[in-house]
Image (cartoon, rainbow, N blue to C red; front, side, top):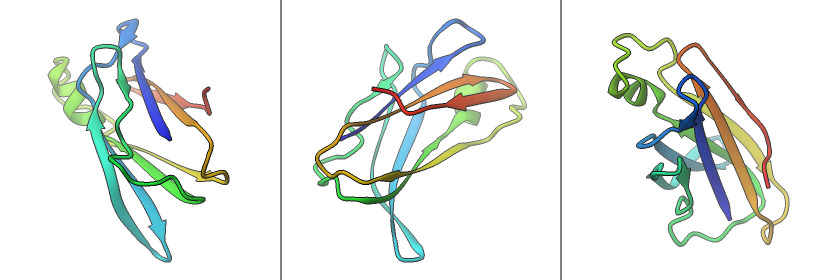
Length: 111
């Protein structure tokens, strides 16, 4: 399973309503396999939408511009945050948190 959690470090809490897309690389192409929007806790736990987790290269794309505009920032610097990562165990849990502010972000492999 692949999940994510977005925290807005400038506000000190969950980033609610961030649209997230999940893609799987197939050769040279990226195929959309799921997506969602972060909930009241900043979590998106239904990204797989019934797709099996298979080893490969995945990409999460966060629509950070829309989120920041909703927070009153007229001209966000980062339009999207894209995180590409590898899955080597189809039975594993992959949690990819995003720490977000208007002018920076960071990520890590969570648990």
